[in-house]
Image (cartoon, rainbow, N blue to C red; front, side):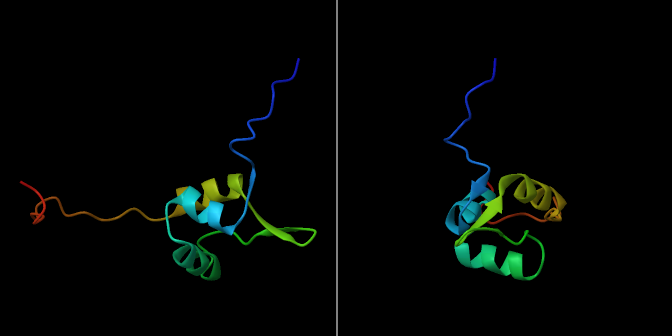
Length: 77
């Protein structure tokens, strides 16, 4: 017996959904796609769709922020 598809979390995302999915603005997402840090969309007819699985892989490959824990943050405390 097959399970129902989770339509609230589709595999293919439009540009705005993809940007939100990875947690950035659409403009920042466009820059990430242009410089190759995020995948290019797939074309389905006239639509451009970003593959959620590819977004996950690209997000995993992003470098981590190098935080020097010895430096105090003005917002700490």
